[in-house]
Length: 103
Image 1 (cartoon, rainbow, N blue to C red):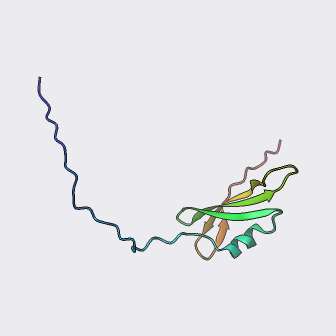
Image 2 (image 1 turned 135 degrees about the horizontal axis):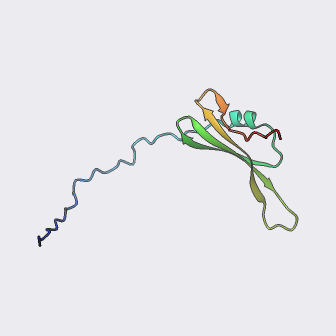
Image 3 (image 1 turned 120 degrees about the vertical axis):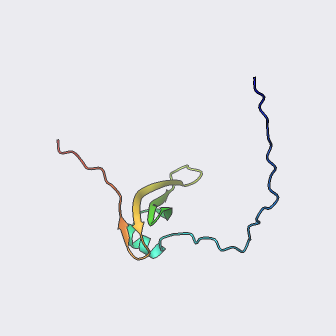
């Protein structure tokens, strides 16, 4: 039977420290006025939330806030949700909608 040797690697002491002043990538978003124009009027609107996905693609959720009788707090819900493409100039709805069957 052959003996196996165990070799432990030492941790390198030459660590590069990250500079706290290093530039961070800017957060990609869609301007509020463009979103408001696209979404239009929504009853009980709480917020329009663009979530960056990748490339020029976003998920845009339209949140509403309603108060029910005898409730301790408001009820929040996503009223509409869109899959969007935005390149800084043009906003395009890429949401795939379910087609109804004609039966």
